[in-house]
Amino acid sequence: MCGLPKRQAKLLAGLLCLVNTASVFAADDLPEGAFRITPGELTWKPGRVPGHEIAPIVGDSTKPGPYVEHVKFPPNSISQPHSHPDSRMYTIISGTWHVGYGDTFDPTKLKTLPPGSFYTEPANVTHFSQIKDDGVVVQVIGNGPTATRFVPAVNGQK
Image (cartoon, rainbow, N blue to C red):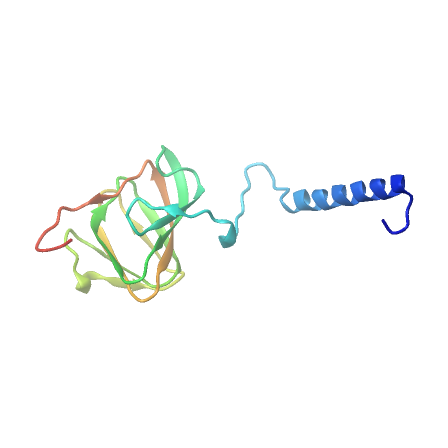
């Protein structure tokens, strides 16, 4: 290594490795209880509804306690009327979300929410959504355990 004697080369290589490792840990040296994550670090898995994907961020929505997760909805899809047992807060991260409240899907009740928008879903309140050309990613904050309870099909709804 750079013309150094073998012992010094090994020592230098070891020190470089240690410095490199220390710099990686320093970049992630957070105070106790602190957490940060980039979109590229999210781990996506199948959601509770076919076609949806969930990336848990904080907590576990299947267990008691607070949780934060990102949920991905595919383009050109509709979430039929359903409710959740927990109150939720939503922030639209990307895409345009169209959401309405009621037991029957009614496009006239949809409100268009672009990225950066926020809305709430009270516990056990039936709602529905439509995703058009672009997929949508929303951040959901709630207090688990949660579930998705669909309204039985009415008037030809799927």
